[in-house]
Length: 85
Image (cartoon, rainbow, N blue to C red; front, side, top):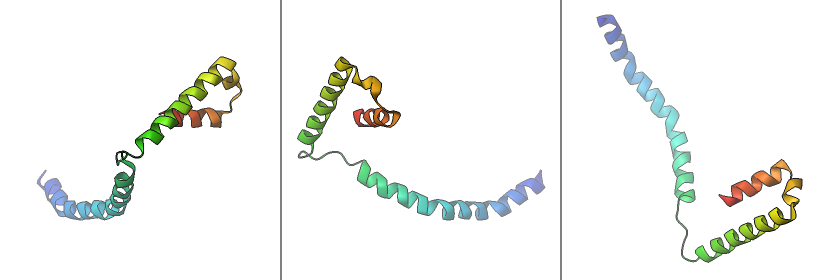
């Protein structure tokens, strides 16, 4: 047991250093995109977003009434799904 603890205490600093070295560039990339993507909309962007949502809802209602949604490709329907969220 003592040998196991000694081996762990000897190798732990190098393992932590390797983990830090590995994760630094990935965390930098993550923070770069997080700062850009997680910014709330400005007051000037809100009317545009509302109009966009109204247009999506109206388009969905029209497609549902006519039944043309049945003829959508998988790519088109997944694009609609992403836009609706």
